[in-house]
Image (cartoon, rainbow, N blue to C red):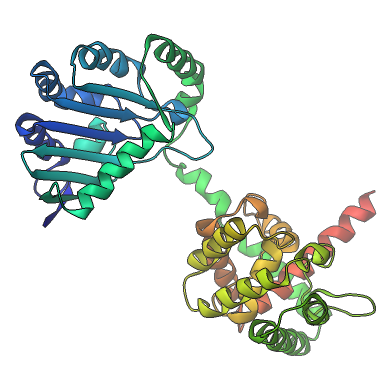
Length: 406
C-alpha cells in the first residue's frame, strides 16, 4: 500500500491527480457531499469519455443545504443513464448530513482512492485549502473491501435514491427556493462584526472594581475553592462505587446540587430540579463522571464533545450543559469554566454575543473557556473559578436592575 498527501497548494492539485485517474481507470466511484459546475468543468472531458467508453461509473451526490448545482446534475443524468454500467444516485434528506468526499478508481487489480476534504467543485479541486490522502492498494486489501462495503451500504440501507426526472425536478425546486438565502450567506464576519465577540474591558473593570468594593475577595475565593475541593471528593466517591444504587448516589449527588435542607456545593441555577431524572440511572452518571475524570487533561472542546456523544449514545437524561461543565470544572478549574445561565448573561452584559448554552458544541465551549481565561488574565485572577464568582456577581446585579424596572 502507498499513501500520498494531496493538496492544492503543494505539488499535485486534486484536479491534476483526478484527471489522470478518470482517464486511465476501468471503474470509477465518486461519493460527494456536493457538486458544482466549476468542478464538473475541470473534469468534464474525463467524465464524458469514461461514460462514452461504457466504463463502470458510480456517482452519489448530496442535496443538503442546496449546495449542489442542478445544472451539473442535469448534464450528468443523460450521460450516465446512457451508459449500461452507469449508476447515478442522490443522497436522500435525513437527520444526519451527507458529508463524504470519496473518489475511487480501479484498473485491473489495482485501486486508487482519494479521501479527504475536497468536494466536487472548482474550489475543492484547485483553489481551496484542501487536503486528501491518495491511497494506492489492491482490490483484495481490507481498506478497499471496507470502502466498497460503505458504498454498497448506501444503496442497501436506502440512504440514496436513483436519479430520475422527478427527483431532479424536486431538487431544482428546492435549490431555487434557497437561492435568495444562499446569496445572503457570508463566508466570514467583517472586521467590524467580529468586534461583537470582544470583551468591553471598560465595563469589565467597572464591575470588578465594584465587586471588590462590596466583597471580601480573598474570603470568596477561599470558599469557592473549598467548595470545589469538596465537590471533587464527592465525585471521586461516586466514580469509585462498586455497587451503584439510587440511595447511595442520591445522598452523594445532593451534596453537589442541593436537596432538602442541603445547600449544594455547586451554584448553577436550577440544577437541583433535574436531579430526579439524573438519579433514575445512577450508573450512567457514574460513567459520565469517570469519563470526565479520565480525560480532564484533554482540551475543553474534546472533553465537552465526548460527554455530549456519551449522553446521546447512552440516552442520559437530566444532565444539561450546566451540570456537565460543573463536573468538568471540578476536575480542572485551570482549563474548564462553568457554562450556565449566569455566565451567559454576564458575558452578554460585557458585550459578547453568543448562542444559548444548550446549542453549544465543543468548539463553542472551547471559545467560551478561552474568553473566561482572557478575563482571568486581564484581572490577574488565580483560576477560572474566580471568573465564575464575577459572572455570578454581574448576573445578580443585572437581575436586581431588571426587577427594579418592573
